[in-house]
Image (tube, rainbow, N blue to C red; front, side):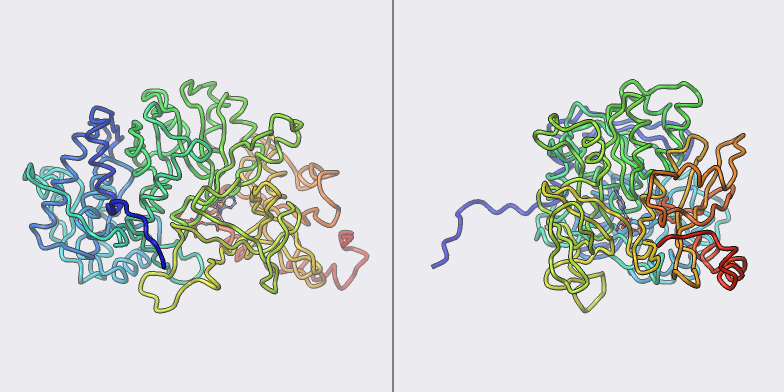
Length: 555
Ligand code: ADP
């Protein structure tokens, strides 16, 4: 006979996180750099009061269980209030990425069937453009006070401050099933239409607990956290939940994410920890190097969303900042792995330690990983054999929003990443399967070549893509942005690879550009680069016909 535990069952609801923060860390600050240009400050107690006002206002207007409420907003206190106020009544906070194409934004508002959409003033022109395509949105609410509402706007608007004006002193958060949906976020849709991932109260609460662990993000009330990763994509890596869970001070940077704006904010607010994608951090360390500025309180930064080049980690180290590599995806809420030292790592040589630190790390408790070969069989955890990465866990998607079929195969989600896992469980992403360069039947890791190129002191940004080749199928080429004043030639860049990779991995060419295209999530857009630079070059065709003129490739 099955014997069940006899413990209380209290549903894990996000509202309990903000309620507890107000009780235990009531005077801990939340600081927001606003789109209005000023800095707003209040504390967890104030935040909780306003979350309840949002909740009450929505209930009064007939928003209820399961209804979707869209947000198009930067990281800030009002966005945080919507996270809790909307989800706390059993409705769904649908965070929308404003960097998507307007047609995609309209598509996901319609696909998500959003009844209300809240937006920052900076997106007013965007709303004007997409509103006619979203006839089912009942109310567009601008995150501002009444006097800041634009006049003669073609769509009826309401002010957020007026909407939530009424106090809700008697409001009590409702209790409901923890499996109910809380937040909806769409993937970037770089290939095909964006797909919705519907997070539950349970999945987000569990991720918040796990992320706070010492060997995960190691969060505490003594921390001051500045999420640079946007709240409009994958829950800002769960920080709007994990920060109040532990009572950490929160600093929201708003719309300005350049090196100058971030370093000033970090210094003014005593930020101890932040999180963002490599493109943001490359600009940040470049700014520190150029200006001599320092962020003395900043102890660690989480780098994820794309591979963290070892040279970036080294730059951080020079400034006394520890970079912590993490991996995840929209479908994993996103926290999957974090690279923190393993027991006994002090016995490793500095070289071995560097190698481990460059990996994406171990699965946080609650997440399981494995790699499989083309036949689906599990591959050895030897740190060498690479295959497709599969994931499962408490905060991993089961099916996309609105899909009738599960997204899993045999209970696992296929990530589309190519990776190795070592004896100690450290994950190393060698590529995305669509980015890996297939040359003469062998695979070349675009990430490995990018890591070398970006360590060149005169290269500011770089991407490696496969260019179609008549003989080898694909050959690696680099697309590089040089630092100001640099006169590097193609030969100089290629020379820099000498002795660092096998000969057949050497890029065939380097194209210099002024800037690299970015995806809506701030990563380098390799699809766009492949469209521009990935075709067989006429010169290559000529060379292939006349092998004597071809660059020697030993495959
Ligand atoms: P999108 O950018 O399309 O919205 P996600 O934000 O969900 O997608 O990105 C997930 C993908 O980003 C992963 O599958 C992986 O390819 C890449 N990624 C995330 N973190 C890392 C990392 N630390 N190293 C390498 N790749 C990473």
